[in-house]
Amino acid sequence: MSRDHDDWILSSLLDDLARLALARDKIRVADVIDTIGARGFGPLLVMLSAFLILPIGMVPGIPGVAAVLMILIGGRMMTGETRLWIPARLGRVEFTGHLLAVSVARAQPVALWLRPFLAPRLPLLIDSLVMSRVVALILMVTGAVIFLAGFIPGLPFVLSLHVLVLGMALSTRDGLAALVGYILLMPEILLIWHLFL
Image (cartoon, rainbow, N blue to C red; front, side, top):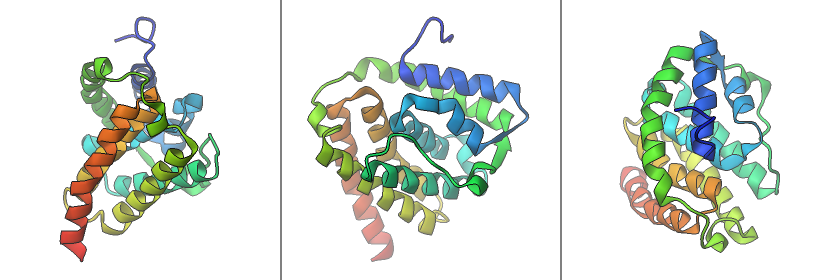
């Protein structure tokens, strides 16, 4: 898959990450953030949640990094900011280029499969001021739960599902996809309630 032939935002993001993975043996979190560039928070959320689903999510510390980034993204969205700031120490966290390449290769067919189902529609459900704040709050709470309880096997994977869908919704201004993301929250809340309360 080449960016020259497919400029869909998620496909082009994966192409850029694949090039990054092939160019370096060690990759920092800051490198990934720079690669995503000005695409916005949606693709970044897709990447973070995908990392928790794909092999890279098994690297010790990656779920915690993803959780902190979710909290930071939520905070920036809550204040109306459109670019992510991360602490320098977090930006220096490293993982291997091979692991990123494997994860991107697994994600690319899924991205192509999802493409026909995503389109700009019902924008009030995703990019209105109120819903933007709701998404921000969801991200901060999700990040906090993953950070505090991410040691439970499978929990980061489960909690990343609604973030993945909301990221795709933000990337494509698809309010229907956002609605699916909101619905996915319900069983996840019940799971957290069962585990901790």
